[in-house]
Picture 1: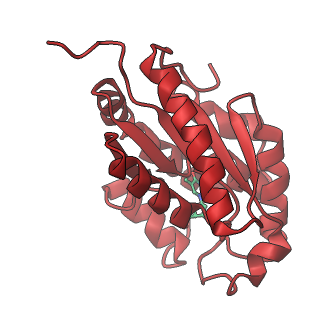
Picture 2 (picture 1 turned 90 degrees about the horizontal axis):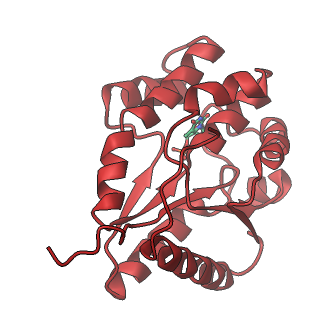
Length: 212
Ligand code: TMP
């Protein structure tokens, strides 16, 4: 086996308010990395394909009601049910570009009034991202982008609160990008950060645990 056992992929998370451009940037990034020969996969949370994910999806589209803490724990369970697969992929050398992760989990639930430490607790011990790219946009600017869709959290006042809790979650793995820049400029900034991160992980940076 010639594969260097330390040559792992990077766990890279994109975060931001609804309509910050995360999803289209993550598609562009994955296409770019594929094009230059990197092994890369596009992931997103919530992963609506699992049983838990279907409960979450039904809640988000207002087809079902759930207690705030119950839905919070489902979002967390949805990440836990994917944890070992994520680790396997990283160890196989695949870089994962993940659209939303625990920071969304904590920011959105805290914005409803739940205690932030209580919100973090169930996600402690998940895989820690190597890089978190936060696409920074004001709730006003986000709302201008064609208006929000019909899902549960897509309201300006609520998004304002979410933004405040995102701020509290920033740590040294975060890089913040002004999401009002031109799409191509945002894309270029993201590429540089990501290539740098992939290199660091290849060189043997250990996989750490979140909030541990
Ligand atoms: P999506 O639009 O990226 O699929 O995300 C659906 C909504 O779920 C979005 O408003 C953010 C919210 N969310 C949480 O409240 N908790 C979580 O843990 C995650 C991943 C998303």
